[in-house]
Amino acid sequence: MLTREDWNRLTRIIKKAMLARKKQQRLLSRSRIGMRGHLCLELRGADGRLKAVREVDNLVVTTGLEFLAACDSDAPATPMGWMAVGTGAVAPAAGDTTLGSELARVALTTKTQTTVNNAYVATFSPGTGTGALTEAGIFNAAGAGTMLSRLTYAVINKSADDTLLATWTITFSAP
Image (cartoon, rainbow, N blue to C red; front, top):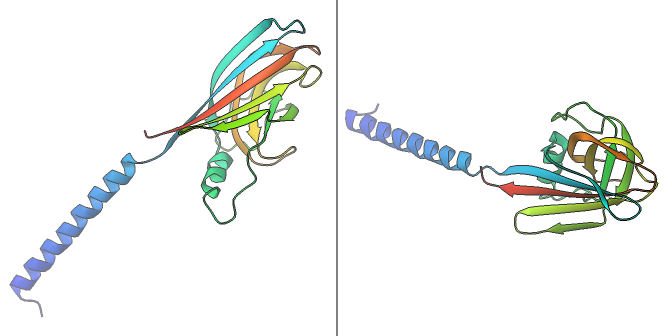
């Protein structure tokens, strides 16, 4: 049986532990990693002149978040290496795993990493991805695969002799 003194000591220890846990939870909630993406599309004609520009913020989808979490595991996933464009117009949702209506997918031209950014660059050459483009995504395979991010944008009409340069930046930050 506990004495009153033992009971008071035990109560103080429990309160101290509860306060320490609350402090730890507050610190953890402040250290969440945030992600945001931004895509810049530049459409150039056969003569090299700029025909259209779109700059759009994007959604990192659930499979993209799972992919990033797996990068620190013992079985890392295949790296992101392809970008796709399509004609789908449905707004992106966290559960998306594909584009709404994929038209073309190309290997990334370059992929660079800085302290808090990953930049993915792709070139859709003449004859590739021709049409009324309204969506884009980043993937880890030439077909199907895991989608990191998806967005929709105002239509870009890419003719057969146009080139589309896509620069997609994912930025990691504290909230």
